[in-house]
Amino acid sequence: MEMEFTKGNKGCDTMEGSQREEGCRPDEELDDACGGDSMNGVSDEYPSDYAYVFGLSEQDIIRKVFRSEERAYDFYSKFGRCHGFGVRKGDYGKDEEGNLIRRRFFCNRAGLRDEKHLNRLDRKRGHRPETRTNCLAKLSIYLDRENSTWKVRKVILDHNHELTPRRMVHMIPKFRRISDAAKANIDGMRGYGVSTSKILGYMAGVAGGYSLLGFTKKDAYNYIDHMRRAKVVNGDSNAAIVYLEGKAAADPMSMARYNVTKDGMLANMFWADGPCRVDYQYFGDVVAFDSTYKKNKYQRPLVIFSGSNNHKQTTIFGFGLVLDETIESYTWMLENLLEVMCNKQPSVVVTDGDDAMIAAVKKVFPEATHRLCAWHLQKNVTSNGGEQMFREIFCKWLYADMEVDDFELEWEEASEKFGLHKKCWANQMYEKRHMWCNAYLRGKFCAGYRTTSRCEGINSHIKGFLNSRHSILELVQNLELVVREYRNNELVAQFNSIYSTPVLTTCLDPIERCAADVYTRAIFVLVKKEIDGVGAVNFVSKRRVSTTMV
Image (cartoon, rainbow, N blue to C red; front, side, top):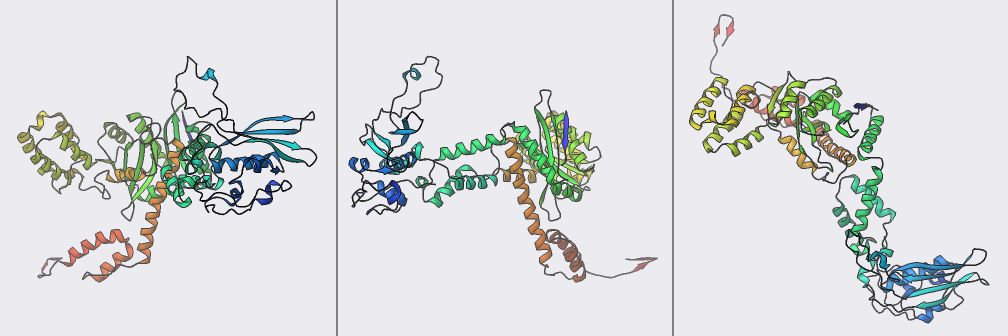
């Protein structure tokens, strides 16, 4: 089946001289009346509304009055944060009319774990570490109906466990929260492919330390994982397809193709946006592709189609994700590349020595010259050829400008000397000589492609954008960032070619000036070498032979 579409809170770390010099507030003052009270000796790292909770005794708290039950809970939370314990809401009572009239707040280590969870025989995972100690610390409040205020009935300040040091209070679950600003910061940097560890390092540096972030690394990873799951709630493949459909709606020239297996799972996928298709029409005479990169959640081979533009830079024509590295998968990929690119056939295709690739290229691009990557061939010779002398000769065959007859003669001599007739890999290389020997390829325009090193360079570059845990949707989105950088490099090179004029240094000024106007800066450097070579020719004499001037 095939388918197509074209359309933080600061933590309480330190406190010096933490006793409040003023007395507690009178009974008649409400809880928010002194939210801005000052306190001598309190560190500037504390929020100002935390100052009044330091140094309060049991009697001070008993005399407190609150406007609402939530105000009381907020006070006890601040009290707990600044003294090293978490707070949770406990039981409550209501009157006959259903109105809340009493409430209790406990230390978060109150109670004990139910024994039935400890004695299970079918447990597979290890026990979580115990955090509850049956602590009795609490704050009990009741509603004063006459004044419509909440008053303290009982408070217990003693704990049966060690209080958390202030430098670690930010790790208590109750006091951890990722603010909306922090979420936006994380989402923004994640959208550009920045790793989570670097994001947290940057945010901690801005905040003044990890303790002042208001959340832990685990919270951040949980949030990112939650957002990732939310994006692919209906399936990873489906999410990627829906995303590409949205891109096609915004850019009518964007196209994507995919097919599915008999089980309805995603098999192969190819996609290219409008600028990629335009670039192919200009620079698609030489196409290189490689599929050695499998850095995604499903270990699917990622195929990158690339070429060389008029600035001698790498340009990307499209991406593909194949089910496996078979002839069928590569054939499907190349056929869809050809159809999406308006059936423009490349003149030269550069790949590594994979047999499935060779068969697919021969089937889909029968008229194209298929060139094998010289770097991969040299690597194979290094592992198979034991003689250093033979490796040097083979390197000469790859790159030297020589005639076909000379190569054939040298191959026969090397076969006798190194026993190549008895080696299977050598016989296979000789059968493929039309795809790697420069004697057979020197008349073909390859745009500087002798190896798939540009593909390897792309693979190396996108390591900063992809990792093995990425879903297909994240893979597609992050590859867009890679393409954006390559296009910016092309834009900079184009600007330099338009904005600046090279200095003329040869003796053939008219020719050099014309070349400077016609060619980009990168190509002009190559043309200038030819002009220098012509300028070095010395005139000796001339004579006429019939109608020919010599």
